[in-house]
Amino acid sequence: MIHQKKIGILGGGQLGKMLAIAAADWSLDIHGLDPDKEAPAKGYYKTLLCGDFNDYNTVMSFGQSMDIITIEIEHVNTDALKELKEMGKTVHPEPEALEVIKDKGAQKLFYQRNHIPTAPFYLCENKQAILSLVENGVINIPFVQKSRSAGYDGKGVLVVDDINKLEKLFDTSSLIEEMADIDKELAIIVSRNESGEYSSFPAVEMLFNPVENLVENLICPADISEQAEKTCREIAKTIIEKLDICGVLAVEFFLNKDGEIWVNEVAPRPHNSGHHTIEANYTSQYQQHLRSILNLSPGNTGLCTQKAMMVNILGEANHTGEANYIGLEEVFQMSNTYVHIYGKKNTKPMRKMGHVTILDDGSISIKDKAKKVLDTLKVFSK
Ligand SMILES: Nc1ncnc2c1ncn2[C@@H]1O[C@H](COP(=O)(O)OP(=O)(O)O)[C@@H](O)[C@H]1O
Ligand SMILES: [Mg+2]
Image (cartoon, rainbow, N blue to C red):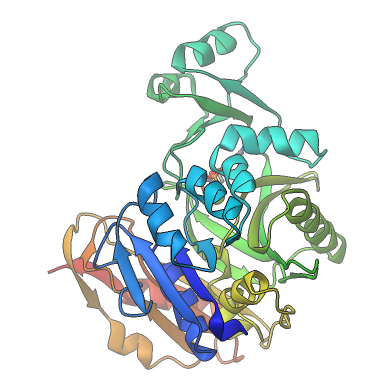
């Protein structure tokens, strides 16, 4: 039955590539749409249609020849997805949920409506509106500005922790959030299928690059109390249920210093914080997404190692152009260390070019190993 289904994925980046690799285990019929004809998933999807996933007509014509349509990026044309759903296609995640998630403001209103704990916030139309609220003492520094629609990988996020930073405010429709007093940043990947079966993966702790607001590495399991882990898993389950989503959903949390847990944001697709599940868990997030959209039972989400770390391999500063990987051979000499290179032709500073997962084998500290990987494996331009 699953082999009769044509699965169409909007997007052909590294997440799409890893979905396609997981799909290959079961010989699924998987196809993709991406504006870049050299996208990382090229050669992994059975076919890659070159086109804009934000364009109504393009998504319609791609989707019409599919049975199941899913995504690996949320910035896609949801009007077309709604229409495809009307036509009887299976669309996961729900286009309505995608619309809520794509807009960071609507996402916050959803949390508020559903009594899901999150940082207190305001929605402002533009820079002037923010400045007025600051002047009137309604918004206090420090705060965080997030562009409602343009953000990913820390782009569109500005931490205003000093009065001089007010100049840097983006002049755009914004979400203004109270600054969280963060002890740890956590993420949970939860899944759901049409029969209402759930799963959740163990919480991971994300370690951020403070300059770029970008995940650099993560460790699993997170060093948190059983109660905190349970709370995060329950919140994640509530969110996926209320959004009526099938597939995987990544939920990012702040564990604050006072012990409170706030939801930061969600992504209704495989996520950077679940890369390690390929080697570290019995079922990967990619398999789990495919199982969920095909209405198959979820696989075992347990860790098959004591501990795992994942480091993102980012394009080196000051290097733009055709990618050249330095230190790969040395990393291949390291035990229980698994390299993933996404195959992007060109590098630029901070671009996600690959990742490395390290499983704990008790030899040397996993953190030391991760540091060695980051110090050794570099992406330069040729
Ligand atoms: N309210 C907040 N308080 C403190 N730090 C924050 C807050 N919101 C975001 N950040 C920091 O900025 C990072 C990126 O913000 P996020 O909303 O997750 O954007 P992105 O979509 O780029 O991942 C977070 O992971 C966190 O480190
Ligand atoms: Mg984030």
